[in-house]
Amino acid sequence: MALIVQKYGGTSMGNPERIRNVARRIRHWQSQGNQMIIVVSAMSGETNRLLSLAKEISPNPNARELDVIASTGEQVTIGLLSIALEEQGVKAKSYTGSQVRILTDDAFTKARILSIDDAPIRKDLDDGYVVVVAGFQGVDENGNITTLGRGGSDTTGVALAAALSADECQIYTDVDGVYTTDPRIVPEARRLDRITFEEMLEMASQGSKVLQIRSVEFAGKYRVKLRVLSSFEDETNQGPGTLITFEDDKNMEEPIISGIAFNRDEAKLTVLGVPDRPGIAYQILGPIADANIDVDMIIQNVGHDGTTDFSFTVPRSEYARTISILEDQVKQHIGAREIVGDTHIAKVSAVGVGMRSHPGVASKMFRTLAEEGINLQMISTSEIKIAVVIDEKYLELAVRVLHKAFGLDQA
Ligand code: ADP
Ligand code: ASP
Ligand code: MG
Image 1 (cartoon, helix red, strand yellow):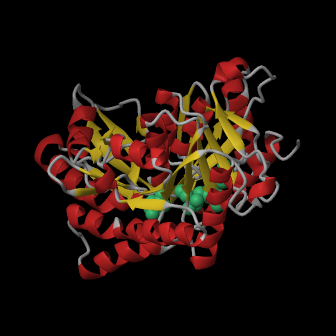
Image 2: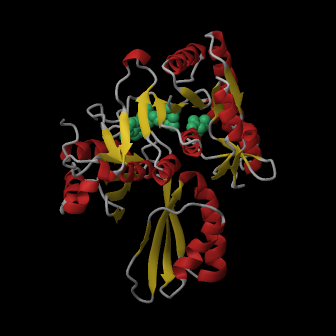
Image 3: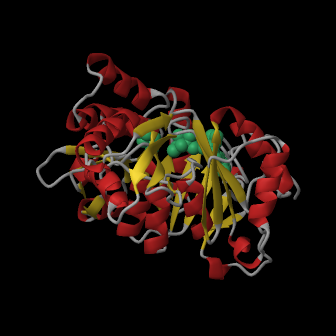
């Protein structure tokens, strides 16, 4: 008997008919002799709706209360799915994050899971129940409801799979696997049979939201067998999806580039005329880190005339807060000339473990973008990734030409 964790995303849970469809799939898997833990998202659009209600009341709502509100979307779907399962003759029991006791830290809206109490779930499984758990949410040590960041149900799924040593964690969504790039942007994108954890981690962190980045981190750390599949295929004739593998599992020749990721969720800030002296980067970025704002790309130019320019990117949703922190800091301590910002940027990244052994990927990427007249505002690299920041209006063009230039549209 295998223990399987399945996570169903918002589109898969989008209306009563789809929820019935999910219940049918679960019944099928259980009837094959598997123990089933199901993690669900809120109905698609629901989390956005809930958060925008709060924003209508306050432009800057309290994060603890945002989590109280946002977590309700998943409380509805666990109940609905459990009822749908019972309707189909399957014993089911639903749990919110706090009922399971998915213990997190208290970083509201982006909490991290610290531990999971697996005992009640194991007992229910042994008693023949399908256990249905609300994704995206937990509870801190003081009993406050927390959420795990947008897309966080993936992480709930993988964390439960790790905590219960499940045989496999299956992420069901509205595409039948991980593609070479977002198939909504490039129709020629191809499904990958396998992708390494490292590559998936880069793809997710560079914007491929098919998996939340923390879910991939978790799966890598605890060696969870993770697969992305479509919930819209017939459960008796399910395709293979995409398996996230460890690099050493692979024995075939690596493609140089496995995928193109992108995001439009960042904003760029530049502090002009910063005195060029030790400690400046810390003075600029320290207060931003203290405010729990994630800084992504950072560029400091070579100084001249005793000053330099310092640019970095932050989540677009944190842009206003970052500016106000910087203004205080720059005025009071740093003495820079000016702060300028740009919220109309996008980041495009080429990802592939094959890059390690093949030089020339960066120059091919830069040439391809230059031929389209696309200016590169920032560049950053890791061993298996090259990322560039460009004007947002060229994003789709950039993704398409890079996808083609690296031969990703060809099988
Ligand atoms: P869910 O609600 O099931 O969690 P998401 O919207 O979070 O679904 O993730 C699935 C979506 O991710 C797809 O519809 C697709 O548009 C997008 N996506 C972005 N990059 C990729 C990629 N490389 N491969 C597959 N899907 C991708
Ligand atoms: N419902 C949450 C969101 O929309 C979590 C998730 O879907 O994974 O971000
Ligand atoms: Mg998702």
